[in-house]
Length: 266
Ligand code: NDP
Image (cartoon, rainbow, N blue to C red; front, side, top):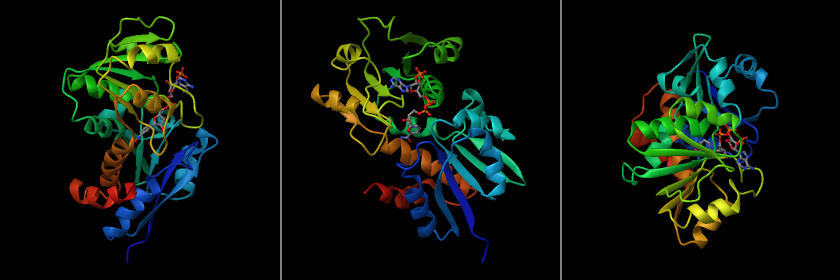
């Protein structure tokens, strides 16, 4: 029998992650001799060394290490190069290969939203960067609203309309409002001041929080306004299937992996 391969998810926090359940269910049911666990990373500068010291075959990288993951790879794919953000790493021939499956995962999770819809993304971190570009490439009209000014520069340089809480216009109207901040992950904070949310949510058609596994304050408010809501479970599932294909060298078809992986969400 082939040697058992080890895969990890690096993050901080990481205890909430569903990825081990998703990948282990798929490994078991597809007869792959591998296992997947969690690693709470304290110092991002150790990421590359840990990869080699623990002899792991691959990993997912979650908040807040996706930029660092991009930096430590020897080779990166075209998607991750567009956003300097890697969420999936494979170790092959003692080299690290980095990919980004978040953006495609999010795109698939909103396949029911018509093209040309106006989307307001709350947040300007790694996930917002990768998804904004892919959404624009797929003819969605994307605006970015972020707490701080600094992370908006990369969006501005890429031609996106950007705002901070201070200069956000009161007449803004968006079909879809998406929370892509990490507000709500370790706390119960809203991703933007309540005054702004009270202004944009009522005029929207659907609100999405890409967090999963908890009822976030952002989705609570959206529900109160009677909006359709969606959490991050589908995005997580879709990005996970794509990562699994990299982990198993594309031996399994997307729909077959989906059949097993989605049981983690029952
Ligand atoms: P980053 O650390 O790269 O970026 C965090 C962003 O959140 C920044 O724009 C930051 O703003 C903003 N932010 C943080 N705290 C607050 C707050 N209290 N109020 C307002 N804004 C805040 O994170 P990622 O982009 O990697 O991830 C964002 C979230 O998406 C995480 O919660 C992660 O778990 C989730 N996620 C879910 C996925 C899924 O499959 N469902 C996949 C990927 C991510 P500032 O610039 O001002 O600091």
